[in-house]
Figure 1 (cartoon, rainbow, N blue to C red):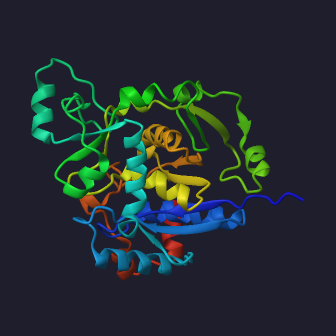
Figure 2 (figure 1 turned 120 degrees about the vertical axis):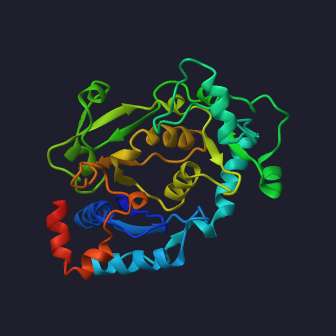
Length: 316
């Protein structure tokens, strides 16, 4: 009898601030889905940005999640302990001729793009990189890693020629009508999850096949001057090495999935199922974020909140 693959979910916060209700919602959704389908729940610490990561924030993550009633597998994967994994991925892309060194500053890019009446921007609102360093003499990823001082960018035009047609992902979250028009052979969510021996994350949704559009990101940075890998390269490598089958995260990362699918294809990594959930908003209708000092879970706890209060507030 063929054994059925166990589903693997993960919650991957960055220790650059205290967790808030938005984090609690994402963590609880992953935890509950894993429990419902008899799957695994992993906690990953995304501390690749050593300039912003703090030990006290990491300790607070463990404390807050334990307070909410979580349990997770040990040891916890910490990105700062796996730079070699990301270096190997970058070297593979380098061997394919797909990345190049870039020493441009943000001010350089701003000047180059400001000269045009209109310049396209990526989904995050930043100007698409104009390709200034694309034709400069090549420096290998290994050399850049050893010497530092420059970033490594993906040559999107060349990468796009290698993916062919049909690069897509299966989305189980709610998507806009315009994206639903891209559905190809829609499958019942329940049937898809039953075929994978897992419970569906929702009872009223369908799997939507979303056509990936990585070109909208331009020549994205995959390694920064002061950090050996970007979020994008680290997250696809981590998910593959940890056997993550289901990526459940906020809608603010929906567009990044196109880029992640491209990197998975180029690196021959498996494609997980995706579910991009709604974001928890504050009273002004803005998403909660560490950068704007949204009320932290630890502060709510000192105000007398219980884990049940948190679940009621986020509708979990």
